[in-house]
Image 1 (cartoon, rainbow, N blue to C red):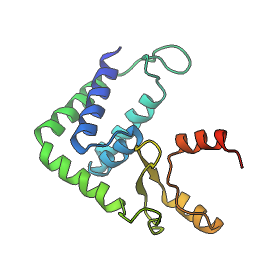
Image 2: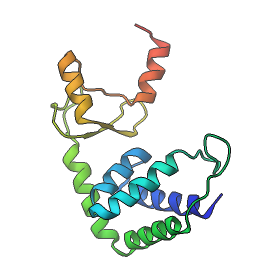
Image 3: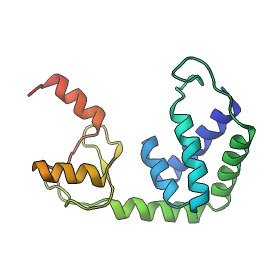
Image 4: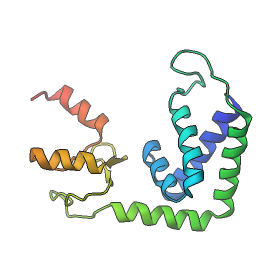
Length: 162
């Protein structure tokens, strides 16, 4: 595994443990929201690059692309900043997570909002984003807010096609 992948995974794992979230996509969306705009842009670039690499440190094309040394240094700097400001980072991230979650009794759906929501899957317990665009689509079609993540919905559809 490359140094880049090691630092990236360490930062992601640290962020997940800090706020108790397991979904990688969701943790990065929340983390990006607490960063200044210039840092957000660089982090998004690195995150898009990382998403093109599978767990073996190779791209989907089969070779490990060259990673600029600056990216490793940048990620290491972010990891150090998060560790140094752990409580502040945790509070900001939890505030974002809590502001997007709606707690309702079972069998009731949260209200449609015009902002991204984080929903906990009733199938596997992972958290996933229900974007504002998805909400508009669901509302226009008269659909209920999803209770299951895309993976669990796909598994359910295979077992019980309608």
